Length: 497
Image 1 (tube, helix red, strand yellow):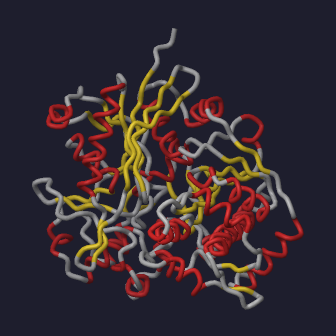
Image 2 (image 1 turned 60 degrees about the horizontal axis):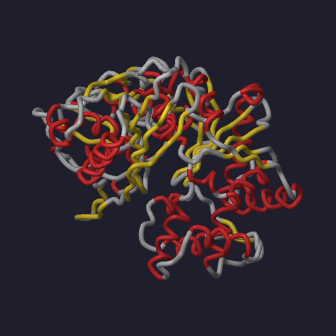
Image 3 (image 1 turned 180 degrees about the vertical axis):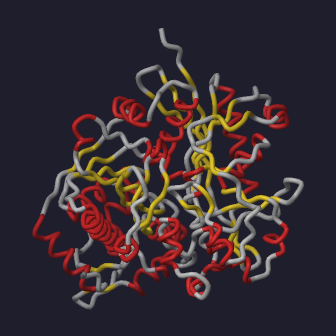
């Protein structure tokens, strides 16, 4: 009889964190949440920070709860890309990591372009060009003559930073490193040309390490504090790559030309490849590459996903505490369909933290000269705009690949929203498979299972997920109406061509 194994996954998303135990019986994996907490950045001194110490406290709290209930085989952490902490010569953290939504990188692309063009950075790294990329954050510190950057001995991405404080070991996980904009993804080494051009210290970068292996064990002080055994800590991928690793596409669907949509605070639409896809057309379309687990690469587009409606919800909930997501979805479904849209990629949405409903009204467009008047119309505007922008990028991925995409697999928190799933399906005109919602934590667990020798490959892990978790299937509806919406949307925001 196969011994049941227990794996603790810590999934730190942009708005919340979870400690989830994966229970693997040799055939199926079951998830049990043992701890959940809010992840709220802190605005202080005109800077937006991650509350790293609070998050580390919550992580330890979740570990204590998990270890008290289960005989854990290992643990692993997945979290956001791009952001980082700097350590001094004695291994101390200089400062709370700055949040990617902080305004220090506003306009930074123009500054960097004076020294090296985004096209050159893209050609050398394959990374999607975004102001939040680590290389641009580092250059903003250079412009400020930051003493932290000059004195730093080591840079650790946030997932690696948590691992360091748990184990005492410093590693640079590969998939997270590919979000930085300074790594040659194919050769898996730091690009000295880029770092030299920007005068960024090269000694702070560690060699990259592949996920899916044990990177250390819990340090003695952590074991003593929590009264736990020196548990192996497996190296997970960063959150998006962990999520993609566990997409439960198996059987005949693997033969289809499919795309994934990871839909949470951010939304990533993309396809899987065996090496980075780098071309001028990819850059012109705003696409880029990230490293995946098990030797894969992801050609994708990062979109502002549910961030807009999440920030609207926060504003509305402050006015009406009993508000739930079911209310928001119902209002969106029942509101007038006036073809009012926003360009979700407008950078003014990314860093809006005060009054998102007003920002949506301000930036909305309609061929009927209308603006969303109430919460229901704002929600409809946000959800339909996300669906239509997803459809637009699906077409761009098709152009790059030279073949039609015939299936979209949608995962993450957005996959629980049946209305959004159906609208994505309608806008794209292809079937959508939705679920599971906790794919990121599941990918984290699968990588722990690989490190533990329980599975041999990502595809084997996907088969486990397919057998373990229910999926929802959607088929396109109202084709002519949604084709008309797509045409209106692209004309409003000059997206033709």
